[in-house]
Every structure is written in structure tokens, then in C-alpha cells.
Image (cartoon, rainbow, N blue to C red):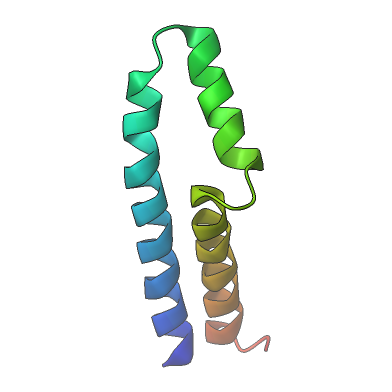
Length: 70
């Protein structure tokens, strides 16, 4: 039960962070600006990236819990 809830919560966190990231990517005019926005998203520890990485950790925890490795 906890594994499935962690998977769902992880997917929700990732979807929210990506939905908030896409408008920033669309605002960039050139390819160089798009790469800058992308790397800013990956590296920024206090922005949307924290929600994205939290989602990845929740998915990992949920998969490990469902496969009885934890």
C-alpha cells in the first residue's frame, strides 16, 4: 500500500515540476537559451528541481517497497 502511494506521489511531483518547467522553456528564444533554462532546471537546488528530485526518490522508494527489497 505504501509503495503504491509513493509511486503515485512521485509521479504527481514529477508531473507538477515538468508542467511548471515547460512555460519557462517555451519563453526561451534560441537553442542556447533553451539549454540554459534546462541546465538551470537540473542544477537549481531550491526551485522546481527539488520537487522533481523528490518525485524521483518517491518513485524509487515505491518500487523498492513493492518489490520487497525494503
